[in-house]
Length: 228
Image (cartoon, rainbow, N blue to C red):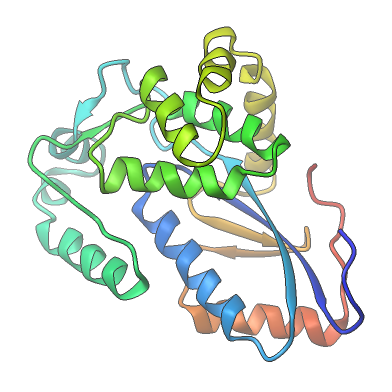
């Protein structure tokens, strides 16, 4: 990726899951930081796979039941936390629709589709469409036909998307990528890696991302040897 003189040539790897609310919040904070810089940033975003619930059964699990089993009864009653997330999302331009009967699902298929979309230059478009599908449209992002429809909304070919999921051609590469980023300490989501060197954990505020961007710009550092 070539950049004009004076432009920050930026590579950002984002370890995330499509059912993680803090992942879309973190992305929007990063986007806010990128848009606020006094210099031009030519940013390449690469979404890396992480499954919050790799052992989730095919039918999924009621959100409150899931939170209670994973984090304790208090988490299942965390309406205040969800309200704060909803408010923060609204401030950043994203709508969360938490509702009774909301279910957590397995996201391995979604990550396979994202791997395919990256090869077509549409990974971020698909990632955002998946966030919207799960958090706003009440859609099952583990279902093949639903995922194909989401891919179409992101400008991709729905029949090709369904075929990719049917033959699982990207299952093994996604598993390898998951392991690779776990080895690089991407144990929680979101985790951001800048230029293959600087790790920023969590959904930081835009100001924190600005500081990283300024440091990279001041040092004139190009992308490093992050994973392909």
